Length: 322
Image 1: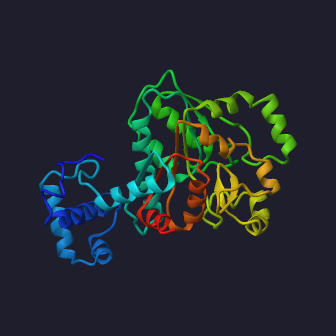
Image 2: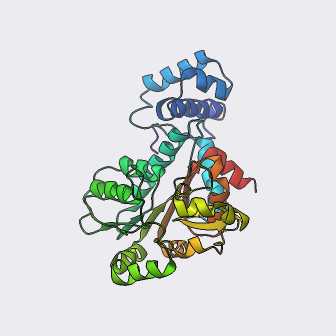
């Protein structure tokens, strides 16, 4: 995130709270899509003051395409997450009440992070979900003709804009790169059918998924809003997965609160890169937020599956309160 000016805590000790409030108001209004009254209610200030702060931001040229003000609390939270979970980097965006807007904010922040890590890297693997679809849209057009994009998991049989095939295609188009797909369902009928597909048809694609130096993934909880729960085999096994301690999934693989993969037949039929392979990648980014995903985000971090995290402020605070 760029800044219009560098703010020193020593130089502006009296104005620090004002700068932080101005940054938060600007972000919630221009990026979060909230009304001035909603912002006033959330921050406990008057609507008149919200209007004044927005006007100041516009007049001073602090707002262009993105917010050009430092979000100090979010930066501090990100630094604390890095220390707590041994991450190489973390990005925290303010929390907003609208879940779709929250996904967009996290996805776009992940896209910016990804863009900064592309130079010199070979191969980008990507998962699925609405958050990641926003990441692809946020990237500026490039021409990575020597690199490639690969889907890290199979797909579903209907188009939704968040399917693995659609997300990976969108990313490849923006980057001007070739794209490779694991052209199979996320969950195969049996471990034997999965292994047969890998042996005869998809071995090269899985090899690319393993070799990709960058992985961008999201995760799902066990609620009805999760895109993985409506899949028949998951829905039929949901109570069993919960009984085994599952709190959610990453790359279709269900794990418990400590990041250990649960022993259930569903986990042996997944057409996806095994989560353990994420640990081997130079860059592995988890982009996910919303309090309903707190348990699975925490599990992924406890399991040390990723080395970078993009999430929202409320989740960040809860992760640090453990």
